Image 1 (cartoon, rainbow, N blue to C red):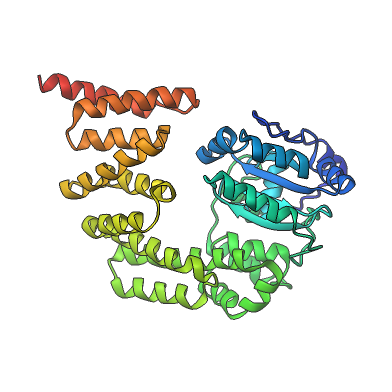
Image 2: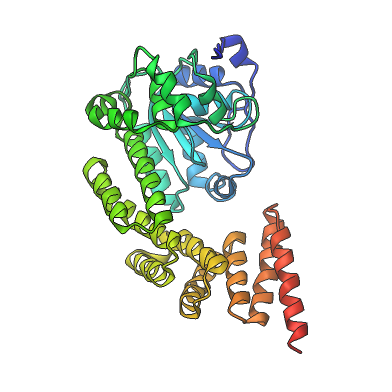
Length: 395
């Protein structure tokens, strides 16, 4: 077991980088940022990112350069950017259990966390409205733990899972269970992190479910629901590998019983059913389900879903009807939002469907956009080469 002590001196030695654009991200330390917020009675906005996160880069390019958003953040918040895989950022990731990127952390002027918001919000008006809601939040403390206490005795397997030392290390449930067996307080902040961020056996999964009310009271519904969804995902994954529909139904029943966010529950069930179809290679069911979900919302909201499904079919499916259906969706997606990821997927799908001239056009467009965004376009260049070879062979 390794203890980590972050003194104010150490914290003061860690600098956070600034971002391009109009948001004036604070360039001092974590400690200095929160001192500034307290002095000026401002909330703190933390952009948690990684170097490899695509949507983090989209936020830098689109969200933080929006004048209305930038002006409001500059006026009402102390904004900082923290790389969750480097230096003190790994401690922030462990402290607030940040796994998805980007994740936005919001704190009140007293330094207590108000909300953890994962994901990219494309609608700028909604993003700005959310900032205004946070700024109006005057609650002194939402969660039981002290947000600025980083002096926590994490076990090595937790540190490893968050990449302390520069490399993420997976651990086994037996290791976590053995540590939990020796832990006096299973409701402590460190125990909660181990229970929800690392694999455990059924004993401790059931412990969490049996004591849901107490854990929710301490750490909120969001992280509890995250634990439930991860537990259900593991069961769905196993059901898919074994082709066991009964096991899938049992997993969905578990989600229905324990997942607290009713608004998200239906979407979670759809996602798990699609995961099962993907694992069992039910490509017709998978595609039809995706088509239904895309139609139920706006294309702008579901562009990411369409892209994910299209790429999966490109890699794994040979059903021409399924491939053509997703080609039609991706045609609409790239018209709406011609970013590198979507253009690359569309070009690949066109290639698989045999439309080489169009595939070449969009592969070339993807490369241009990707280079401008400083994305790695090697795979698209390889695809373009395959397309051109196919066109030569067809002459």
